[in-house]
Length: 411
Image (cartoon, rainbow, N blue to C red):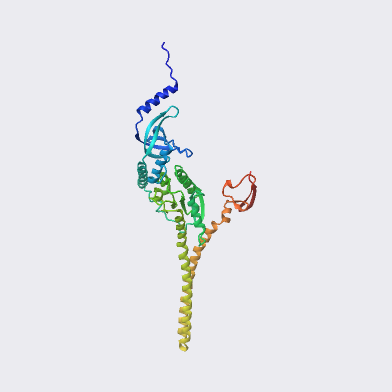
């Protein structure tokens, strides 16, 4: 029996390395999808996970290497062409060589990536999303909704620390006319691969409480124009297009609109502009109403004085035999005056009814009424507690409910 020839593993891997590096060292262009970029900021290197899919299934997979120097050049090109960093879930065409390492195995050593191809893929995705929505006859569905006469209760999808959200709240709360709005924040990731799923999930949550809101706003600002490709997602655009309330977007950019903005009820270049629009809607309702009331009062007073003056002149001019005619004219004037009063009273009653409806709506949105519905306010040292990170073990809290206060200690 012939003896076995046994090789150390290192010699076998060295032989593989020699074969691959000798026969596969040619630079090639490869089309692949970056599943995860795996960029390490402390070294500047990237180790992307590359795949090819067919019918949603992975049919090829390999690891890549992008060293710091090459990554900085590639990323600069992507920012110039796409206004976006190289990142996860991008289909790219890359220039690389095949390398083999005895420990890390086969990988692609990447020298360059063509952003123009990725730009084309993003444009293709956007066009396909629009076409798909149009075929489903929902592309303009949200735009066709009728807005509330006075949109005061707003569901906000954003992040409490977002500059855009803070700008929006500042404009609304510090408006010189003291208009009051009610907002409820639904936190979501605003860019990148998790943006689509978290925004869609919050739209579902808002839909569960639909009766409490007049509109939904999606706010993003302060982050430049990086990561906007998620707003061309079919899933997100479809959720916005089919939402039963008007959706207003202010995602803070000035280039071509994303599909999510195109299908929304109305889009704005910044969250600040969106806030100014809501204030203008309040103007459009409040100013004409106030002007009509003032005009009605002024006209009623003018007519009253005019009729009194006419009556006085007739009384002085006519005597004796004209007394009967004066009485008749006086009666006619009284009837006209009565009609005027009735018309004025009816008009005033109508506007008082409108004001009463507004007063009821404001009452139901008041803190006291909200507390009666089961909500509560927790304070520590007189300040409202908005997040668990504000408190620590041992802190004393006071929770205000509709029925009184509850004192508690954080354990």
